[in-house]
Image (tube, rainbow, N blue to C red; front, side, top):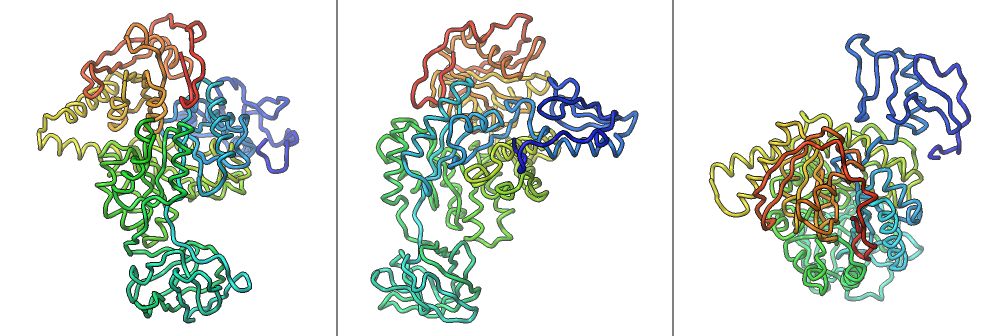
Length: 591
């Protein structure tokens, strides 16, 4: 259904060599043994994890077989990952007009979506309510948990809306004035425009650069009139300037409120809808996160706050921001305007490392598969960008316009899923292991015996044990989500099934790498562990004979009990365990 020209016609038989092991079906071409989705082609095959392997005996397939594989891939058959639940990296998708229905959101969940994002800069509350209701119902039908993230608009500086003639054409070398925002009656013209920031003259200095429209137009500050507040500039890079475009002041400390009036209204709406996360745009310091938590209902409803890093000021205050936030989003769009473009890659890696060491989840965002807004396949550079984010240690990758307004939202998620899965298999490339090892050396050097450090040590031992005994799963019994967070921090090679009594906690641990939340009625071992095994079996994470590591703790702040067991021949069927009704705000109520 993703093909741009509609349903594809049957391919000519000459294009399908017998050695490809294909058979015809009403819906297109399917491999023999489609239930396992494994295709044998000469000396090569897709293994059960979805990875291509070459046979050492035959040394690979023939050109005809490869052609057949590429033909099938181009029609989308192998865009599907056999088991999205086995993906360790989380995929956040932005909902838009084309992806707001319950059916489409359900398809996105099936393709591998882990969380849905609502962009408060675009859309009305009635639309957001519809998306929240639909995604929760779709998740409930699939016995899944899908947290909701409300992304605030944040404080911003813009040029005026009223422009003479609709646009101003500026050429390099022209002189142009940014007038004080105190006089809003002036109409913008060839001489200049006013901005929404009435302290522009106090913020910039002679020689500073002012960027407009995401950096498409740039100006050099030449003269500043303190009396009138006007700033005379010379055009560096010209173009057409239209009204209401954003203004960036790279390298300047902008004295704007941490929350605008609209932000406060949006956060109040988020509280009313009981969302799991609020993303604070243009976070500059820890004070911005504190301001969000001071809004009534945020702390009371246990809503976690994500800091969006989009400016040089935020980079300078990153340690303080990390201490008070629950996670970080590397928002490369505005960040790439506020700092030199060539620094974005290295800054992204440093931010991911800081989050890995602090044990906070990190989201890599903006233009990850941007070409798939209009194309059924991404560019090779985009595929490398996604894989490198996984190698660097990101917990989540985010899709924006690709799923909000794109033509191929489902295929985009499937492609993202495949790229992340392949990157996860190549463990030798992962930087997160190095980050944690460096931190462990420092921990041993200091030899701290605080409660937090004891939890770190035990979680590290649990992850090491899971690797040593070749376990297929780690089960964490957790009240607050702290045990699951610490286990995720230490980079296990297998998924973590987090059992919790709290619907909110289940939603919030969903963004940590490798954590699969499961809501239970009791944390008693005899009750919750069989239910956890049943759920893991349903998801295809374990089977008869699989080894499992169980981590528990008396107060969830220090995990202090470690067990291992082998899944027996008889596993309770999930269908015979009594469940509960759906509760608004919980995203999902499981047995």
